[in-house]
Amino acid sequence: MPDITMCYGNYAGLACPRRKICHRATATPSDFRQAYLAELPWNFKTESCRFFNPNGLHDDPDCPCGHQPGTRGPCGGCNCADQP
Image (tube, rainbow, N blue to C red; front, side):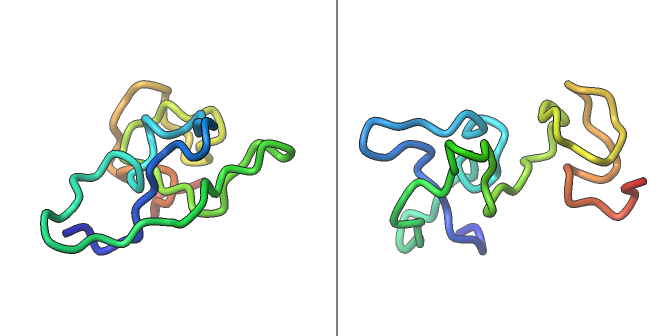
C-alpha cells in the first residue's frame, strides 16, 4: 500500500492534466485498503494542484529541479534535495 492518499485523476467528467506524471494517480493501490482524495484537487482557475507529487519523470514544465524534460534525475522528481 502506498503510504499516501491517492487520487483517481478524474472526477465527475473532469480529468487532471498531470494525472500521468503524478505519483498519487499512478501508484499501485493496495488490494486491501487504500485512501483516496474525495474530490479532484486540480484547480482549473490557477492550473495547479496542492497535492501534486511527481512520480520521478521530469515531464512537468513547472519542475524546479533543473533536469531536462523526459529524464530521470537523482532527485526522483520535483520535491528533491538537489533543487537549485
